Length: 490
Image: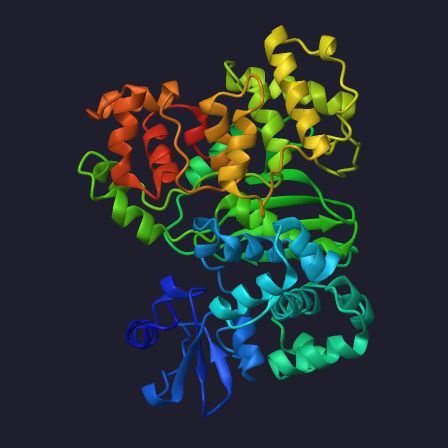
């Protein structure tokens, strides 16, 4: 979008928050870059230029605006919508892969050479993977400086910097303030005294309807791993350097996020996973506008706009849970998953809460005895087959996975049918166009609205909803009075 100068100018002049994260405005006279909705008086058009990423603006010598804090914008919805190399790379960079394994680690996950990845990111975003990761480290550092009382040396290494000198130089360059000055300018208030404990605000593009989003997560919560408590969805997180517990509460203009981490180096990755799970980088205006073009969906969208797709923090975890949930009720699926967690999950402490375990990874389930599972023999075989494929690498699921390739790998496994494949594509792989035409609830909703309700006919009709069919599914499911569609009240 940053190449469409006229459109960018209109967004800046109208202070349109819908475009925050889509592009960044750099002011040539002040050498500052802003989000489109910056509250200051817009500069003259001839003094503006536009960049596709904060990293590109930083590389060009601009520093972040102190008023609008462009580094805290919602992420571009393109990286969730698209499935090409650039989008996959951006999702992996947000997850911290460059900080952990460098550009070679990113290349290995994507199956491309470092040079090819560098070339494509530079062409589209104006910055390579190292610059993009550096911009993310600066954002993480700012969060730690402003919300904790950690010594600056601890902040530097927790944010992923190799040295305190690099940390100081980067913060000064990006924010035009020293780390100490940044802390002094932060809003007054109590800072986290417990190491690893943080209180954050996760931004999103309005509107956001929390009912089906938090309702689904709470209704399908695995005992010991997830819970709804005191108005917040809480769950444990398995992270590269340790584990964490997060509590997420919907607010009118943000998601309240309370994070507790055993290792603060996991902060950026934990935030990225929570944002993906809640689909916070979506563009609801674009989604709802297209779905409203179908007159049978218009009343559903108008009644409760801004529905998101409830996703997951761990794609492999969701694949196991999807198999456990085949052809059983929501309550039965929770029971099966809870037994698996108690038997094979790592225990964690949750003072004052009801969380007790991490969901077991595929490696922990490798020795699973199928006879210990209270389910039909065929589904036991399917579960052990999925676990074996995940453990061996024959099945690749994650934020950087190729969606078409993952679908093919899933389809090749015995006992994995189209419904399971599309559920995993929708919630684990984040495909906004995933569609489940064989789902009984979806077909019942379609029939009630006068839509075609046989799988083949519904699939043909759904072509009008592309590329947002996963969101159409949420609106159709919401016609049913099921707990997944209601925000919990206790």
